[in-house]
Amino acid sequence: SPTLTPTGVPTEFVEEATVSPTKAPTAMPTLSTVMACPPNGENIELPAGPVMLERSSTLCIITKADVDSNGTKTEIAPVARSSNGGDWEKHAGEFAEALLYGKNFGDYDQGS
Image (tube, rainbow, N blue to C red; front, top):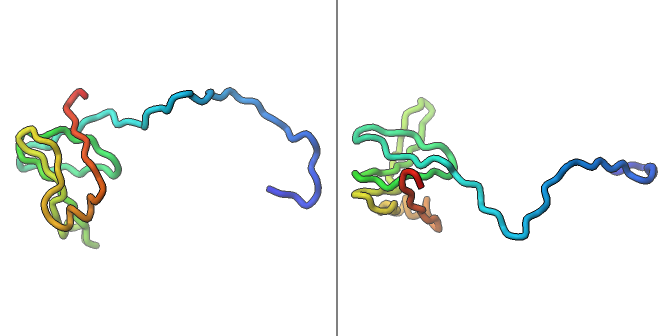
């Protein structure tokens, strides 16, 4: 931080090993695990942030749920779906459209 009186010259320089910048842009961080939809009748809670979900061979729906003060999931609304090996797509409705406005889905296969 600044001082009221001048400091000694030169400022102490500590040289540590650094990595040189690359000439070409580097890739964005990647996720390493593609998640599959759970078996029919079961559900999983997705972590916050980016998630890689593989296309679903059965109907798989991502829902958004709010949790009330008692820990009960309320106001559950569908936001995206995949079925019959098809790409993920926004679910119909204003809620999903507003929540995912401007967002795109990438489609992944297990092992990709």
